[in-house]
Length: 334
Image (cartoon, rainbow, N blue to C red; front, side, top):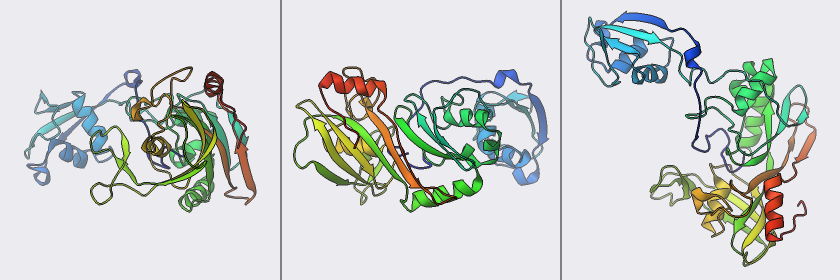
């Protein structure tokens, strides 16, 4: 949630492993028909083996699992002819095995038959992605609750970056998920963060930043404030309220009014206060912080089924508490 957009992916992953070798492969043989003549190999495969996605078949190609007329081929753009014989070793890939239950504990703040509210630790990836096909929040949700398999994305309706800690709400039923998605789109879910940024705060204690965010045209791994007349992006607004500061760093409360990818991180960098230890956006590491100093401390919304008002708070994690002590800042929960 928050600085990682609702239903969009967040940070590039770093590590991961495969469980594909645990499974036996199935050999599938097909013959190219007249309707596939001169097509790309990956497109022809998608038509001849329609029960599997084109992206999955492309992965098999790149792994050397496809033979064309007896010869291994790894180029999806290779052309086929009518009568060609294709043999495919249907081997599970990391992606095809991603949605598997894993048994490990979650810090559950609230639970009923419709929703969960969890406190995500820094370092936990929310959703499987390249480099992190296992060990994610989604895997843990599937392992914790059998009914999560019946809800799209195991009920995940928003995300936090891997290295951001804090509160998330997860749906346990399809009706709750649909309602939460509508509420998020209507900006009826209040989410607030605490951020530790570089630089002494100047000017008014309250500052509202309206600045559109899109992919950084100079570095595709980053987001950036962009000119919508020249680059694709979306409008974004974050309110910042000063909590405490000194000459080196500032502690602020961040209130999101939109949910763009890396929104708080980008907006803080745009006003010359990059987050401590957020090296992607120019914030150097220092003191006890070894990940971006950002924590989702408050989450408030109306229950999507019962209509009851709900509000949750998460205490600062240990590394941020140590960072405040390191710089002599005070934190009274806003």
